[in-house]
Length: 473
Image 1 (cartoon, rainbow, N blue to C red):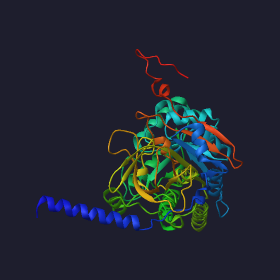
Image 2: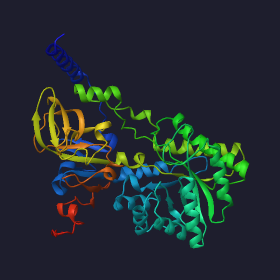
Image 3: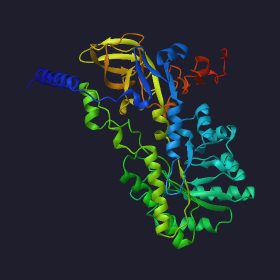
Image 4: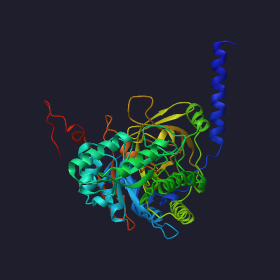
């Protein structure tokens, strides 16, 4: 078979699969799921038109649904079996002081992983006893502050860190409140002590004998998104079993059990191998997940609390204070990311929609399902749809926000909304030749507040001082 014939066959296959994908009704979720209303003027949130927000604050722009966020906090706080969990906001997942203030005012505490995050929550007024210090790379300066002020717990990541914390505590003349990050059997990596390693039990025993260490907690973070009862129990169960082993063999009481986060977002799923191949190679849009296939925050909270209560009752073990660190499951669905269509490049079978949102602003979007749609106008009932590859403004082929998405015929200046843009979108964003978005919060009564203004060119270079003195606004 000649090379030309092979090329022709491949192209015919690509076109046929693409045509099948376009004709196949890809499932989309109602905008009401996120609290939005589809009006003749486009999408609105609590009576505020998203197009008006772009007009007022520019594009790209994050839009925070405050009532949705606070409802999710309340759902996680629900608990069960007489246990009301302590929620710690994961600062790394959304390091914006204005949002952190909302969470703290709603009764949450703080989980930090760095000296910068510790500095931030201190300036937000979080008392030391409401701070959990995690992370594999804690600085000496941050550890000294945490020990001296008696934070809720410093979670140790490995034996070498335990020795360093003990030495710093001795220098300060005050024992450090510590815990141990555990990883479940069969996993590896740079995080935590292995539960199935006999040395872990011996290490905790040594910590109990160290006069400069005060072991108070166990911490486990799944690291893989959990959706079902079985997956949650498979994470919490081994933590409880390990706490029981320590209680029986060492006489140690676990005062605080931190189950971490990792609850999945119901409306976000990674693009699997087949969906990714269809989208990237054949331009077939992915279909929406079933939100009911993932535990809701209230159900997750109740399940974990009831599991802990029942286990402790069965084994006559004291019930520890229960801590949760929800990240993506807390903030993702409360935020949308607005972008503007800057250019259109007609191609076959795909059309490229060049927007001001790509991998620098939404680095995970091209690998996951994130629902998108027109934000500032409502297409007519007979509007023809096309499949677009939604790309960003940067000059490299990988700058893609969505490999394939069906949208009404687009025009330059159209505004698009991407859902579930909360946790880690801002954390992982970069200023790659274009400024980072601002954040505007929308309240139930339609009031808006600019939580973070859009970055400017002077913002992007204000730390550069050699032969450079641009005006700073």
